[in-house]
Image (tube, rainbow, N blue to C red; front, top):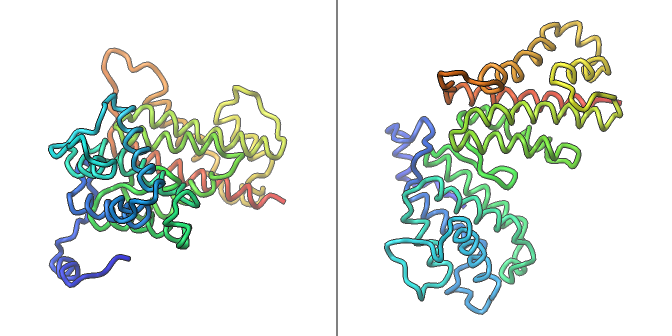
Length: 311
């Protein structure tokens, strides 16, 4: 539960709350609050020492990070070889300067939480699904509270730039793509966000186009609409329109729709990252990649919702 404390209300009244998102810092109070969430769901190894599964959850997180980073233990100023896994993880998390590694810890720990159903004795005595849902909701609320521009959505940390666009486009897109026939498109869309988070702008635009094309191919496959294996986005759009994915009477009213779909995602990708950059490196502005991501999300929502209406 998050309490609207007097001090918080005063900060809001004074205008001391962040009005833009930050991405290069995870404040210490936020890190401590995240550790509290771990305690709520996975437990404290001191509080539940007889529950082997609690310690094994933290061991899995520590071992995974050590293996991926090529380390024997997670470094921190307070490292002690006799620490249990929770203390080793928490000390690393609270002291680490590399923000990407800090986000690694958040993502991996909440992926473990997301799968902590009947694996933990503590959760068997509680409403596991509600506890897990509350944990994820609190994490995302804490991110917002501190003005940190990340959210945990569909089992991954993604970067957000606009709360409105995130709520109205990105989250619905991920939810709609979270179906078996859209699995490829979802992976590509999440990959686009992951590249964006790491500043790999050209790779992000490439994956935007892949997600766009994969969504249309999935729709064609579902309805057995024929297309060539190497069909481009333009050709796939033509097929979808020819098959009345958008009813003809709406196509007449939305004459610019096809032009928008044909020229937005594919053109942006082709102009900026689809071809050789020549002798001068091509620099893609961060705000432009964010725009393309949100445009892709809105388009995927449009396509998948239109498909749902097909009789």
